[in-house]
Length: 429
Image (cartoon, rainbow, N blue to C red; front, side, top):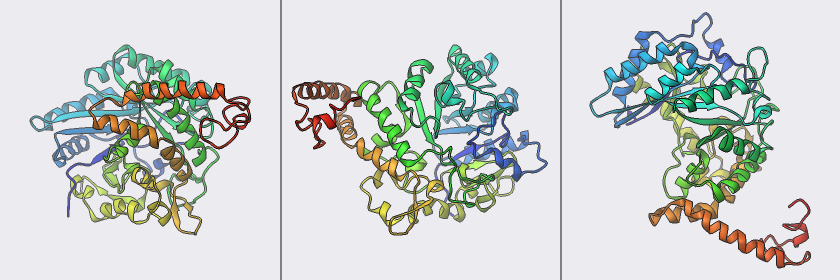
């Protein structure tokens, strides 16, 4: 059995329990997997996990990722103990990092002091301005949560705790990309943002095999592509080097000849596992279901589960089941078919395995090709990619000059082949 030199585990120490009832959440239904459980990781399992996880990593830096549900419902004392156990079991010279994903509604001064003191990276779930966020992110009573989330963000800022934003893209906010982006950038002050597309199976189990239909809350591929393109076009002209958007970083890595660095866009996957509160380990956070249960780390060591033949097959299937349309696609080098959980469509020639978001991925990655090439060239020359902003500003000035000089029936200087009056000179442009 070949064990990976490093792997990632998303830990659910409180299972799927949460104080919110977000309409698109795929994880709340996982509570049904453990009837009668108190959904609380006990201290002996916590220590066993920390010990095994550190021992299994043959790298100098180890990141613990705490998620849920809502992990802060366990109480601060649980994480204080976790930090103490990490220090106890860390090898000399090893750097231990912690990342915790939260809805931020529970955060007070004590929590935020703790995060700042121990260097936690706090991921905050926030889908944009109030009306867009509250469309689906509600509490158990169906009440809006935006104001409570923003109070948590204010506490994080006040205590100097590091945080980033995880914004889900769904039917309610997908047509408002710049409203979302500018709010996160200008009002929240976020420097690191992830835009996660919601592709929600139309079932009540949260499982991946029940149906290929998706809910009306889901974002379409075309919507997701337009959303990313609109934000990219603003970002690349004013925010490079100041705001870091995960999928833009992924793209630049790929155009620079490096691996994308995110499982969704890797050729194969299988190095990002999920562990429930009782020690059950699953192939992936999106496949917490019986068919993808690898075992329990209290019975089989964590490293053996991560390196098991079952997990190897799971990871390789991402590449091996890719339809020919994807294998021959010019943006495969960065896309790699996207996440297997979203491969619900068939190709025009009837082959299964096409990603629901294919149209969006292709549109976005095609759109960013030239600026990514320019930024990658700057990196190769040892210069900052942010130099692209000056280059594009000069191009924009020249384009505006040509557009101003063109007649309404002249070809548009953008190169579209259309007349100015039907392109950049059209009403509303």
